[in-house]
Amino acid sequence: MTKLKNKIIDGFLIAMMILPFVGCIVLKVLTTPASEGIDIKGAQIYFEIPMPIQPLYITEATVVSAAVIISLLCLVLFITRGLKRDPESKRQIIAEYLVETCDNFIKSNMGESYLFFSPFVAAIMAISAFSSLSSLLGLYPPTSDMSIVGGWAILSFGLITHYKLKGGLRKYIKGFFDPIPIFAPFNIIGEFSTPVSMAFRHYGNVLSGCVVSTLVAAALGGASNLIFSFLPGFLSGIPLLRVGIPAILSVYFDLFSGCMQAFIFAILTMLYCVNGFNEEDYLERMAKKQARKDKKAAKNTAAAK
View 1 (cartoon, rainbow, N blue to C red):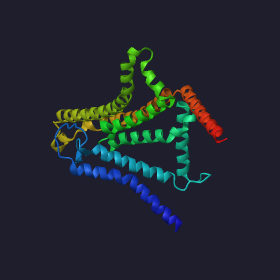
View 2 (view 1 turned 135 degrees about the vertical axis):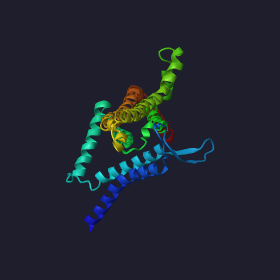
View 3 (view 1 turned 90 degrees about the vertical axis):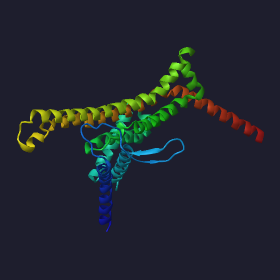
View 4 (view 1 turned 180 degrees about the horizontal axis):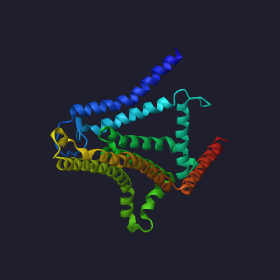
């Protein structure tokens, strides 16, 4: 009975890894209008929700992003089911390997004291990589939508600012006036340009890959019709030049570039956090805070006597 239950749960999780993308593909096919020639545009808007300032648009990028998150959640639940102290199943060996790899990645770039960053970094890299790879299924990759990547950048910027503020608000504000006060406007602009540069770097690279692939595929289709127009019957309409070459481009733009941008986004977040955190200022602040607590406790003890 237990084995049957486990098989049912495993089958459900595997289905939930696949069905969200199947649903996205079906939705895209049913809602995308027919077009001729090159069609390069943003994510398709499925519907909008009225809001006080402006409507909230539910786009293809939003739906695919939700599908990626659901699929990854089910994947994690699948490979972490039935964990034991001594690994016996292949899925547990894979899970432990992934955790160890991520921990080593954190240690080599941030230090052992930042191991608690592993879940966040792993989540950012996985969501970003799988979002970019969704283009292989003919879907609009969420990483080509500025609203999606911009949200990630704002989240990372909040985390970076949190670690900078650990040294104290006064020293954080004072840092804008270093080395001389006249540089304050430039330092402020540089501070808030961090999420902008992170978002545009990721968004621009993925979107440019989609545009280049579409243009090359369209150009090869036109060249094929021109060169092979002498062939009889339906053979003249087969885009022979589009066989193979777009696939080679896809290996770079969809596989290599997408995964590379996920890696860069994660490592920039880590480096900004490490470089922004001043351990000496933090320890000094904690020492002063503890001294104030000890002084207050001493006063309370003296008053009680």
